[in-house]
Structures are given as C-alpha cells and as structure tokens.
Length: 258
Image (cartoon, rainbow, N blue to C red; front, top):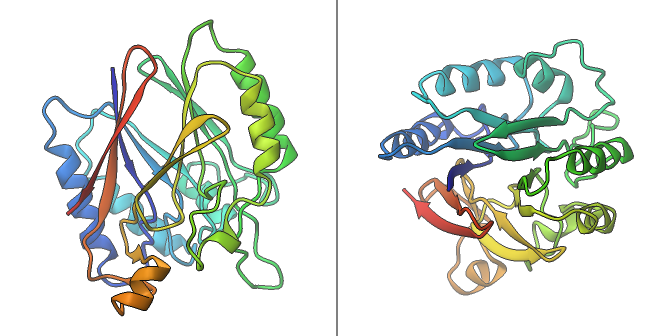
C-alpha cells in the first residue's frame, strides 16, 4: 500500500495568505502516523514564476519533516526557466518540457510538464503535452518491470469539469495522451491540479483525481449564480487529497479542506 499526499496550486507570491495556507496543509500531512509515503505537487508552485517566489516555496517546503519525498510538476503560472532552477536544473532549455520520472515504494511517478510558455509577455493558461513528452512517457511506461504500477501527474485536467472558468483552459491534446496510456497496463491513476476544486472522474479508463487548491478555491458556476460566491474565493480553507494505492492497484481518495 502506498499513501500519497496530493497538493496543488500553492501560488507562492500571489495572495498574502499563500504561505500560511501551504504551511497548514504541510503540517496536517506531517502529523500522519504512520507517515505518508510521498507528496505530489501538481503545478502552479508560483503565482508569477519569479525567482523570489520559488525561493519562498523552497523556504516553506524546507519545513517538511519527511521522510516522504516531494515530487513536482509545473503549471501555467510557473515560468519554465525559473522553475527549472528551482528544480536544480538552471541550464534547462526554456522551450523543452521538464519532465521527471521518480520511483517511490515500487511505483513509477511520471511527472509531466504541460506548461505552454508565455507569448509576447502574456501568460498562456491552457495546457499542452509536447510530442517529446508523450514519446518519452511511452518509452518509460514500456520499460517498467512487469506489474510495476505507474501514476501519471501533470497540471491541466484532460477533461471538461463543467466549470465555465476552467474548461476553456484545460489540456488541449487529451486524445494523444489517452492513446499512450491505452497501450500500457498497470497505470493506476492520473493526478492533476489547475482547477482549484477537489474533483474526481475518469479519463482513458483510469481514475482521474483533480487536487483541490491550496491557495484558493474556484467555485462552480452554480455556486456563483445561486449562492453569490465569487469566482475565486479565499473564504474556504486550503484543500488537499490523500490517495491510497492498494497492493491490487486500486485507488481510494480522501479529500480534506482545512
């Protein structure tokens, strides 16, 4: 059994509450007995992608007591060259995706870069997986030992969530990724962020889990119309997911809003 703490959209450098909200989530997960096995952060580490924001993320996550490793993906608010420096790769070509593959507890975590770089100084909010990322994913999944499970993680959900604010800026090439996943057994789940709402559905025949936002919550269209909630609110507490991957490959997800 593997226990995964899943947080997303910390947005350091955004709202002044971002640091405190991230610390609350980390403190909650750090209190688990026995401890979680791994933390996964599915993007938008920073709000503007500045070196100062990544330095703040480093300071906050330095307080994580472990022993669980922390795994990362970039999101649309991140800036690849500064994110790469944060991940210890300052010479990474800014046009190339920064994908990482890490094994924890007998599970291969495929951490993909769905960031579309800014154009003419303007942030691009939808996601895209470059052909190089898809081809490498295909190779890495094929190279696993028989029966080794994998979890695929990236920022942008690959399906509509029926949210007017988020659906136009989801992953724009979901069929290409689905084709890769369909060719490989023992992919246990897909984990994403971006939507700032805790959601669960399926994609490519797999469990799809969208982590709730740490920094804020994006409300449903119905909540905005019926309850008068703002499209983005800080009135709700930071949320996280805890995924339990059992030895048979089944995934159970528990949501928490603190």
